[in-house]
Amino acid sequence: MSDLKRREMKLRGELAALCRLSAMLDWQEATANHISLAVSDDGTQFLINRRWRDFATLKASELALLDGAANALPEDVDSTAWAIHGAIHRLVPRARCVVHLHPAYATALACLKDPTLYPVDQTCARFFNRVAVDGAYAGMADNQAEGERLAKILGEKKILMMGNHGLLATGETAAEAFDAFYHFERGARTLMLAYATGQTLSVLNDEVAEKTAQAWDSEPEFAEAHFAQMRSRLDQDYLN
Image (cartoon, rainbow, N blue to C red; front, side, top):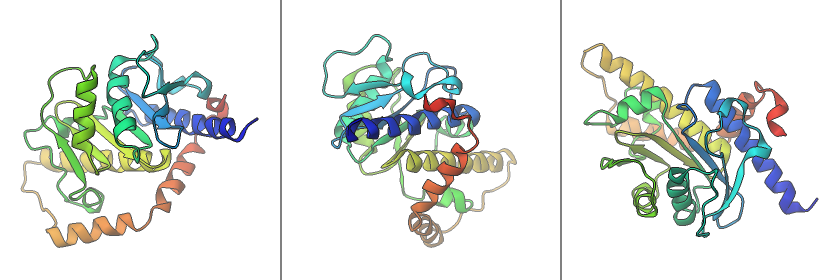
C-alpha cells in the first residue's frame, strides 16, 4: 500500500470516528449534516459523508472522496455539503477539517438577535473575539456563491456562528475541529441556561476573557488527547 493510500485510510478512520461521536453527543440533525476532512496538501481533495447516512452507523469505507475543483457532483453527495464544504476547502486551505452540524444549544443561540457567546465562564471565554458571525441566512446553502460567501465570512477565524442555522467549526486536524465544536456547544449550553434564569449575566471583562482564551490557545495538544479519549469509547467497526 502506498504512503498516500495509508494516509487516506488513517483520515477515513478519523472522520468516521468524528461522525460517530457527533451522533453519540446528539449533534447531528436527522441525516442532514456534514463533516469533511482534507486529504490533499492544498485541501481541494477531501472526504465527506454521503447523503442521508446516519452518523451513528457510518463506516470509513462509506465516505466519499471529492475534488473541490471538479465541476460534477456525485448523485449521493448533498448539494449543500458541496456548496459549503467545497468552498471552504478550496478557499480556506488551513481549515482541513470542517464540522457543520445543528447541535441544540449553539443552534438556539444562533436564533437570537444577538448570537454572541458572551464570556460568562472559562469555556465560553475560550472563544472570545474568535468567532465569525453570519447574520444573513437566506435559505438552503445549495450553490457555489453561497458557499464562497460563507468562506469569506469565516476568513481567519476557526468558528462560524451561522445565524438562524447552526454552527461550523474548523481545524487543522479532526481532533482540533472536534474539540472546538465540543467546547463551543458546552459554552452555548452554559450561556443559554444562564439566560433561562432571567437574571443579569455576569460577563468577564475583556482583559480576563482574552487572558483565558490565550491560555486555551497555548495547549493545542489538549485537543488530540480529548479526541483520542473519546474515540476509545467507540466500537472499532467504524474503521472498516
